[in-house]
Length: 325
Image (tube, rainbow, N blue to C red):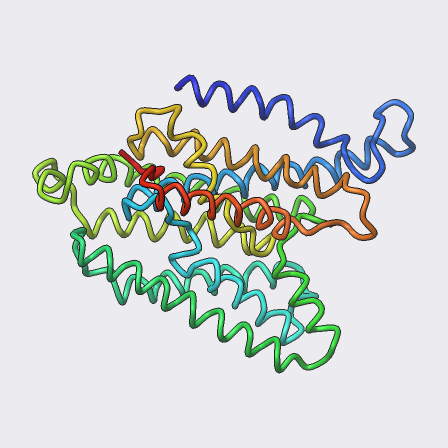
């Protein structure tokens, strides 16, 4: 385990107990009434879910930036997050979300549909510049189509309550989440990170160039398959239980890359840990801010991520790219 990973684990170990106590009303385990029930049934699953979702988004962001060789790449570029969101919106639109597990099932079905469409369009391409361009454009097309269909569903919402539910859910949050969401997201996210780890060696080889990567045994279709499955599982499961939480996969690889040797395989684990820490801290901040209603997690991370993205663009404009090399 690298030094960066050890430091991030230590920071998580410090932040996690505080996340259990933080909130509009701080919990004192010894004096707060029903403190044990609050911690076990409300705070603990919420904090664990923050770690799970952040870890999946961080790992998928590192893998995407390594594959596309673009420091501005983000997991949402694949179109899987918008596909999962479309599935969840469909469950809300038709009124199925009231039944347990149906909203996550619809969201995962939407993510699976986006994965299948991406594989159908770009799954036979090679890893060269043209293949990566087609892969990126296919993801953007799927994201655009899913976004348009989501907006269409909102505009035709059967009633004001359904529209409010859809818009609120799309903002992304961990409010009122329970152990049910943890048990949905945990195995899917772990499986997704495992798929990304299977592609790590090929991603390292790809840094040397297409010709060198092929000579080292890199198989483009195999690598793309692992990437699609890994990003689909990590991003899709996160959207299924928490809505859209953006910018994590863009931010954290940049923060941890200088602490590693910059190989995609070396960046992936620290990115997963940094993503977990970022979402955990962001959720705590959302809870403790003295607002009338709790700030949505997706909005909070967008307020951080958008200026960060602008800063990266300005660095590239000034000839100081936060590149992968």
